[in-house]
Length: 640
Image 1 (cartoon, rainbow, N blue to C red):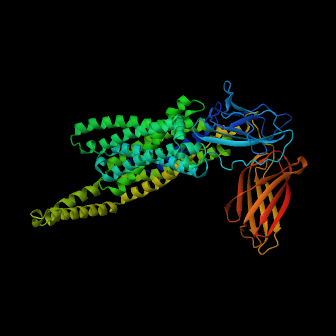
Image 2 (cartoon, helix red, strand yellow; image 1 turned 90 degrees about the horizontal axis):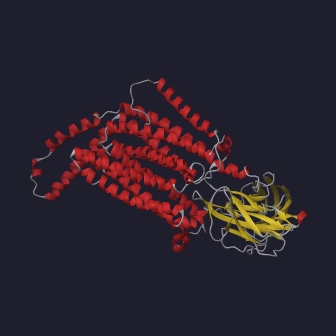
Image 3 (cartoon, one colour; image 1 turned 90 degrees about the vertical axis):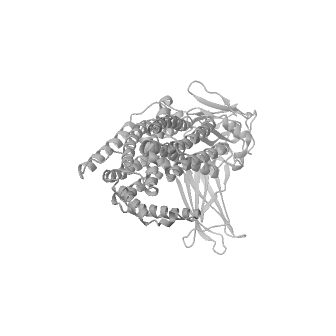
């Protein structure tokens, strides 16, 4: 809804210009402060270096493999695995050794003695201090590179179906929190009569149910989300116990306990408080509910702050309370907006005073959001290059744009709010009383059949509600306000989705530092994307076509490979079997097999394809179009 003060008279030119100028100033301030820069990394941990480095060729077998990270991580059994060319374990340690010193975070595993020459694969997986799983893999060689049968995982930690469900639950949790806290605040602060309105009760209760269910799902899925990626492990009691010993697990359990207190708050709000008629007693109860509800809401918001981005990195002691304020402001604004939408569409009784009170609440919430958002943006991004060149920065730009759209729509809502009166509802109430008493037959009150009397009473109530709704809907001010608030709510749903994505995205500052800020980082060799096009003919019916291959980034280390097959008619063509192999003949490496997964008709892909060293690689492609028709074609490409 409106994020400004109530309407104070027409000014058709100056008001839009003033609003636009204020918005431009806020946006400029946000992006200007991003350039201020700050200290070291914040949030998602990233691999900053390894010994041996990615793609390195060492003369003798090292005694151990060490990995360095940008910040503290949580590791467990098999968090770092070293595999020889045949896929067997080459390390001796089940749990990595903590080799950290001072601000340097380093873990390592010892290797077996007498390892033969060849290419070794290091696969690692850990949990960042901000609760998000991270993983990766790289290779090094002893003596000289060799062929390897190790199939690197194509799925990153936290991905797959489990990751999708977990992210949906994360979004639902934010949505439930917004409805629970924002809806309760709307009733207590803006419209106390809403405590007796059934639609408002349903909104807040559904928010509580959504947040509770989403928290339970996240708690159960936490073990497979950070580990195996299998739904069956959600009911592994040992895994659940290990989750409870972590910071995110403790935060989720704390949230469930606080939701128990929130259930008691809801019961009092829509029970005792709704039935209380004495104004003095109701005022005292309002104060008590506001204090108690504020404590519970702050505690629930803190369960996010204590386990995600705000809890790690620079100025964590400041970032956590700022994050709590940010979440509470979001809930007050967007949750109040949802409450107002329900009240305007589902109840006939909300008056202009309640709408104007929410206008003031929304304005205060926007001020808090602006202040806390500027600080969070500076902390997580910190530079123009990170703002424009990282996914986090791009999502942040999208979020700011959505807020600008939301404020623009809110400006129209504010104008409708200024014109809103209670005359339509008041005249409706007055007009309903007398006709009902006149039209009611005397026989009804004396009707000996209580069931028939109750039925007639329900019919009269339905007619009264229908008349009220018809008169209310005919009010152009309320109709205009409903439409603008509905548009605000639609933008708010998208805004909440983008905010959820930001919480699970590596901050731009960390991503930039991991990519190039540490000289010990295993940076990939220079190169560029590889694009190949090869015609084929298996000799059978419908056996002609073209294979197109993209390899990105086309450097040593991990690459993404995409294959498209087009038939002779230029349309996507499916084949029963597609295989690839990479060979570096100058170094006697390979063939390294690659079996891509089918994504769509005529389109296959493979992630984390390892290129151990730069050179002129031969890419063999085997295409089978029937049980007996098959051909292998090849082409050379310079990689790295």
